[in-house]
Image 1 (cartoon, rainbow, N blue to C red):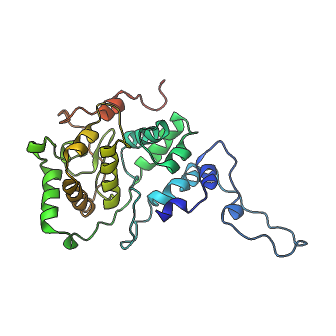
Image 2: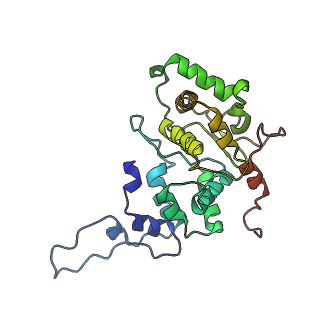
Image 3: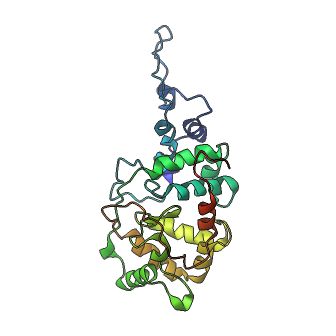
Length: 267
């Protein structure tokens, strides 16, 4: 959680928003004032007004796509690089419109336009971040077996489909808007299931993940998160193309993504 507060909120907003003046690099870095009042103050180099520079507000928590996280670092925030642009765009909308609850995210995206949120989503979708899996050997064998069963086969008695039925055979996501599940921290996966169960995370109705989360026991959630968080990504982590088969459950988010026009079209 410490990563969320590396910058003061006002700095994050100035970093992210293209409509606000950028803070000079020396000020943002917290450099001290010159020792002598008579000495001329150095002229700070201007911060480049680029999308990548503004999105440092995002990578400070979600990770720099050019740098894999240290293996011994416990992380809560999800990897967002390489996820489908449609998924990222709709999650930004969900934070802005109250379907997802995380105050820092809501605070940052509230003033941003649909077009700018889509630009942010496409920026991260074009990148890939190597993720470090947890050590599988340290996890109970029975828990891992149950997690693998739910991920790869589902549970017909619970009416829970396999994760791969929606998130792709390689679990790297499905275009245009279903996210990959590998490379996510276990704590984050657990938290999202909890949010769906208590209603603090919602999607467009019918909310298929809300339905699935309600059908799983806490032990099943723990098993799924343990297996996913310790499964390595394939060499090519790109999401797969949408298949011809319908999803196993009606999913409002998928329907919403399919009906969203491409960038530049009228909305």
